[in-house]
Each structure stands twice: as structure tokens, then as C-alpha cells.
Image 1 (cartoon, rainbow, N blue to C red):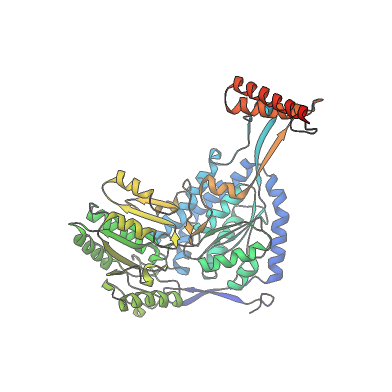
Image 2 (cartoon, helix red, strand yellow):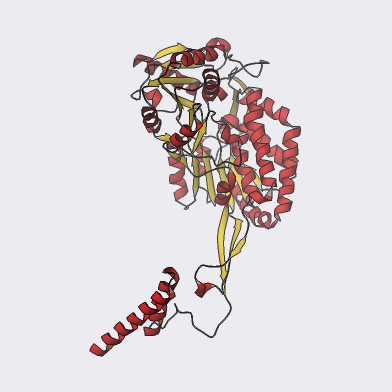
Length: 522
């Protein structure tokens, strides 16, 4: 398929494998035109006053609230997510971000300040924040509403324009996002969409954006960087995780089991912050905790948007289903034991995999090193806390980690020993829904941060303006150099930084004598 010869994306309901829509792929010529329009719109949008831009955000929030049921239904049909999860992980984070943005105290503000050096006190210094320009966003299918909107809303609030490409597996939800912006009467070309597959994404990532934001796999993230490098486009990458849970021996059985089961299986385990490795520090309650985890997992129901009540939806597609099963079967071949689950459920009519708990795993197994991105929870018992911390850090990923214990003061100390972008104690995964908290990781989990003021700074040009009044006197750092300028420079530096004027003056006198003696000797 060539981008110059448009074809269609087929949107498939993973719960029953039926096609629910066909959307034309945006061809190369159309992408170029869209980019040009988005670029032309940036100057006008960037000059719109912040309070007026925020009026659009306020209206957008109202529309999302009013249409939340239809949004939830669409997510259920295209992704298979349970309604409860969609409300909490798709709708709530977007509404929370709107509220955060509407409080202008959260946003970067111009500021003036005096410099430290007294020689520079006459200067007026200002830092201002300008829109960066056109922001490109490539978003994933697993949180097809909240992930793109967390970036889009932040970018346009700060005066940028946006082109975004949703995953080919969630194109209808991407179009719904555009519809919501149109309903909010957002000016033309402030936000534009590109529909397509991997080839479309390749071309998209080569455009000369002012910043490119990508959420996806490390493999594709590296390719995104290579393509963006041609234009020196700065990139923000959120590339997944292999998040560990460290369970200390004093952790309460019921609450810990409930939290870890939710962390492992919410969104069918298809979350970059899913609990993918559990390290249980041996104690008198370890066996009971494992039993409770297995019991809760076994009680979870598989289902689809056609069901009124279900806990876990489908895997997104057949390739992902097979990859998950291959990881489980490989682990079993290497000695792992299935305590519950471990089967593809073809009888349910979609891409379903049973919620699975494994024991007798080790770090030589692929399932403990690769991102599973499915409903599989490996449990590993260790002898000491130090072992658990070492194993938690023994990964190419470093997005999130969780610690489970009654001893929160100890947990906070352990948190400082774990390499990750976010550490939660006695909970997991929830921080993505909090716009106040930075979100991102290290290692193969990528770099850059979404959410919070630290994300806002990625979408602005931080400009310094320093002004001075004309003077008939040269600055001491201007030409010509000579004995006088050298004396002033050294005396001034020593006086300022030694905090001792006498030492500075004496040092200057010594320097003057030294220079004078050198001149005499010549």
C-alpha cells in the first residue's frame, strides 16, 4: 500500500471480531496539506489571549461530560474496555486535566528578576514563555481517549497547534475526539487528525514539527527518533514498562491482593503501568497472600461491551493474543507453574485470554524481562528486601513501581533505591489520572514527562530578555582589556564570592604589585 494511493483502515471490535467501521487512510498529499494548514494556524492561535483559549477548554470539558456515555460506548466497541474502567481511566483524567488547566496558577508565567552580580543590577531581566509551534502526537490504542487528549489539551492551551495520529486500532475514537473539538467551536486547524497505519506513522514522524510526542513500543520509539532527527525535532517518548511490585512480609493480605490483582489485570493488563512482576518477601503470610491473589483472579469475569457486567475485556488483536500465550507457554516450558488461567478463550468469540497467575518464575525467563501487555501476573518469592529491590531494578524498563507494606516510612526509603519515574506505596497505576503529577520513565521506558508543569515546559519556548540603558561607560567585560580591567575583574570576583571585601581589595593590591614588578623586569 502506498500513501499516495489511499486505502482504508478497518476498525474491528476485538470482542467479537466484527468490523465496525472503515475509515480512509490520509494520503501523503493530504498530510502535507494538513501540516501546512496547521502551521499557518499557529501564528493566529498563539496570539489568542490565554483566557480566551481557556474558554474553549471549558467548553470542551462540558461537551465531554455531556457526551461521556456515547464516548464510553464507542471505547467499549472499538477497544472492548469495561465501562467502569473507561469512566475512570478515559473520561476522568481528561476532566481533571481541564480543571488543572483552567487554574492558570498551574501554567508557566512570565517573571522578572535581579541578577546576583551587583555589576549587573541595572539590567532588567525577564523570562517569558511562548508557544513552541506545531506539535505532532502519535497516540496508542490502549487508552485511546485520555492519552492523546492529555497531550493535545496541554499543547493548545499553551498556544500551540496540533496534528495527531491515533492508532489504526482506535481510529474511530480519534475521529470522535475531532468531533468534540468541532462541537466546542475550536478554530479551524488548531487541532487536525491524520488517519493511517504504520506507514502513515513513518511519514508523519518525518514532518518538521516543533515537538513530536510518541507513546508506544521501544522499537518504534527508536525509529521515531531516527526520523525526527532529520529535522532536529525534539521528541518525547513514553515507551512502556515492566513494572515491579515489591510486597513486604507485613503487607495486609486482603488489601494487597486486591490492589495487585487490579494493577495486573485492569484494561486486560494492556497498560504500560500494569503490575508485570511481583516480588513477595518471604513471611508467615506469603502463602495466604498468594492464595488470595489466585482466588481473586479466578473470580474475574471475561466479557465485552455486549455484557452488562464484566471485569476484563478482550486482547486488542490476534497477534497480541498469540504473543501473550507464547510468553506464558515458554515460561511453563522453563519451569513456571500456572496457578490459574493460562488459556486462550476462543469460545467467547473474540480475542480473549484468561486472567493468569504464575509462580516459580525467575529472571532467566522471557516473561520476567519482556513487557507482557496482557492479563498475566508472575509471582516470585524472595528471601530478603534487598533481593526484591535488586530484582526490581534488574530490568530494561523503568516506568513505575509499587511497594506494599504497613511500614510506610520504610517504603519511602526503599522508593529512593528503585529506578523508576513513579513509585507508589500501597497502590499502583492510578497516578496517570492525576494531571498534577509528572508521568514518564527511564531506560527503555523513554524520556520526557507528560502531565504537570514539567510537561507544560516541553510545549513552550523559554525565552530570556535582558535589557539595559545606554551608557557612556564601557562595561568592564568589554574591550579594551588591560591592567585596569584585570584588577577590577579579580578584585570584584573575590569580593563578591569570598564575601570579604578586605580580602578582595588586598588580593587586588597584590595582583597590582605582581603585574607592576613583571613590567619592571621586562
